[in-house]
Length: 497
Image 1 (cartoon, one colour):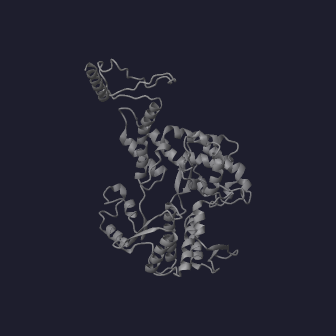
Image 2: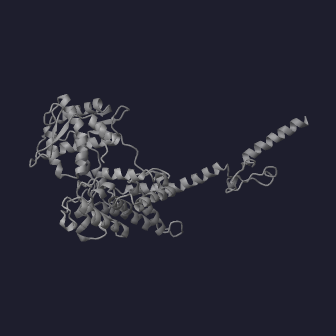
Image 3: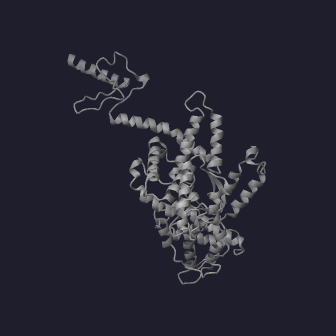
């Protein structure tokens, strides 16, 4: 069932480290060996320490990114615990020689900018995760007392600069809502301190084409077909219902625990692991308004989960709250990769119901888009009494409380994409007219009766289909008519001569 992505294959090709299972009862779940069958002690120790910090999926992702680095260190002969000055030279050589990146040093700021090339085997997003994994490795090892220096992935100059800015910041201890702090806490946190960095890509924006009405309707048709299909399992239907009704990320739903679902007995909502919460269930998702969600969950918990539970327990009260809510048929924790395998198996035969291809993550964007449309209508969109103040306040509350976004500008991006729908709607109408060879004239360029006596020029916008013998007449503007008139006058003068 599991599949390997191209990026995982690329990371594997860059690594010569293999893993072996630790013996039962030993502290090391996995032991890592280099190409000479020597134990890679720091990686083995980091993997053990990292088990208590965040979800297992993050640890596995970081591990895949760290193995090429330790392969390079073994070949280069550079100790992993060298001082930052030496490790930074190794990091630059690793990115230049193994990852085929271009490097642009900035000696004044003690940073290096990385540019990908055609020969770089990894995507930009994977390189970003790799830097996060390297920074995490040295952070964990330093906190454990195993690395004696400052984190080599951080610039000491930028760290000092950040400290100085925070020291001089006006009302630095005030909360954001007080309105007196010199900058938001989010802006302070985001001040860069990284030694290695990539050029900032263009700010993310929702794909406008997927925001239009025909695509939104198509996405709903595909999801409805899956929910009505007898071929889609009860487990996948429960996940789809949650994705559609909560706007949560796929991993937040799939990795939900029994305790997070039970949520101390509060029905219609659950606690999930948010992005960047380090494995803590700090985000609340709400689904009380759609009874079909709870029905789908009840069907899975009563009919399917007990069959896959290793101990065949039928009551969630008997299950450890930290246990996964969703299980595979083998009784192991369900995963996003496993869900995608089922998704594409059913999606292939239904994708013609939607004008564009989409993924489960697009259900999150659809959730936000549909909510904003309904909120605008509720506040009087299209009338003289549109309540802009209520719209902005409720929109902001939706972004922070329902979507759990840290930054307020995220909801602004969605609103900007909503404004583009009218533009694309007008463009679509124009292109349909072009398909029927219809042109229109602006009112201020409309021709007077003396100009149109000889030239019939107005074509109805919604005319009948054109047959093979139909004469197509084009609407002409005043400038063109003046030119035709001058040409006729010249021809008349030539005939008179």
